[in-house]
Image (cartoon, rainbow, N blue to C red; front, side):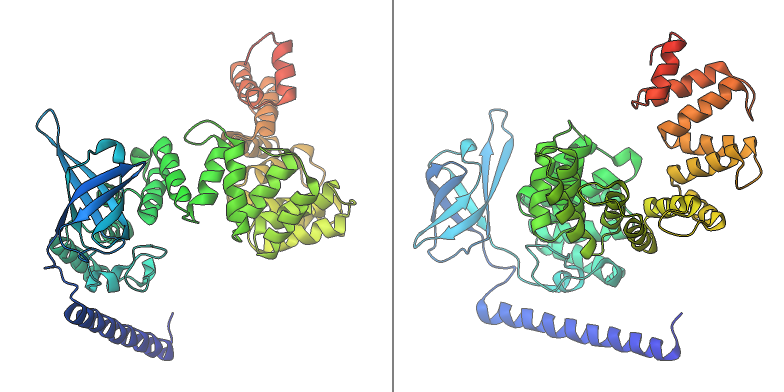
Length: 465
């Protein structure tokens, strides 16, 4: 809640922001008037003089009439009397010609091309510029800072004036996302990409909606392709995602080599997630030769950037003695740092240390508190630990009903060990009605994940998985 002083500060910030925006908008009007940038600037035509791979040289109707970054459009009449549009971008302006990036395989020398000037900075830029947008004309506005009503009106007005300006479509798409209209946002980003196929932020945002959006809008294969295209255009935020999708076989085949490639680039740029992921690749020989020393280096670098999963990994390294001397106290300290930052794996690991008195004095009550905390937040291992505690009955009263309940919760989340333990209890009728068919189904689920004890049990039962 804001105090009276906070409200005054907030109001003062809003007033200052509005004043700043007016100054920037006035400056843009000045540039339009003095330098001649205007939505009334006519399109410039040209003729394709020569073609090379992914490029074309186009003569200019009027020398000096285009600039680097302007878009180029060639409309072709197909054999079905339909118009096919090929779009490109001015790479370099020569004396009377322009070098254009475009799909040259679809063009012929002598065809007409038209140049579409980049729209000047207008109100939509000031109110709705997207962070990390290479085509932005103004300072970026974060999602939470958007004036939604004013931004929506400004974006729609901008598109009325400049219907072929991709950045205004992208700005509108981001705004529709914020307004929780994902389908409309997807269609708008797709329009931006029709106009500018190599638009990194639009590619990334469309990929994110196809990955994280409502279930009926998800398309992991398309998402993976879009993230890859954005990463290839050096959009930093896409690199860890395409790395993870390649590693996890999400939206396509598993490709450890591609994962390592993208993690290495992002890690070198200081991305802590990618540094931790790259360390895992070095530790597990995923797409690269195993090198524990490099794994430790990247784990530590990521942890120094305050990445909690890397802190947990360092705890695991010292607990298990992976490339270092086993040191349970050091392991406990790293788990503690990660747990302070909310890492559920670390909270469970700490619980195990308190339960067994490793690296710290034994304290069963603290262990149970930690397991319950992580379990309530959805961690399957914590659920399994609680089930074990209630099944063993050493630090609490034995309770088969609770053991079954926690094993089932963890099993439903895909935890193979819990699936096996639940199957055993179902087969024996321990804390639950005996049900051999249900037990077999859980054994099979665990066996398909490579759970050795489940596979052995099914072999004894002469069953497959």
